[in-house]
Length: 174
Image (tube, rainbow, N blue to C red; front, side, top):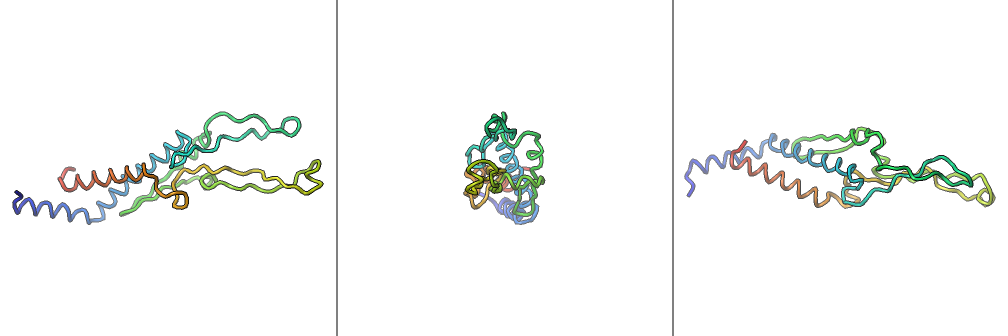
């Protein structure tokens, strides 16, 4: 049975959870976990939902008879590591936001359609057939509401972090 002193202590600890510092700590920890998930996507070459990214394209050098070169080797988006190193996180009371400081990230996140070009040779030119070149396939690195929202794996981790912080606050462990 709890005495009045213990109930008062618990009430004071619960009151601390309404302060902005608690919300900021939780947001920072959840944001750090989200950054780890985004970086794990680079290692596994997959989007936040576990779907693999499109493979690396072919070399642009033209070979005989209009064929392009062989496929490049390696994983997509980790050639120089600049994109992976540009992952950023901004936390405030009760929220966080992850993104990329590299402006090229947006093109890979959403993909591009490329541009239409008129082919210069043969029947394609005669009939005005255009081809799409320069398209970047979508390689999603951060979840979006339009593609399924926050993945279950991410939500579970956020719930673990929040539960641990609430438990720590209630028990008084620092």
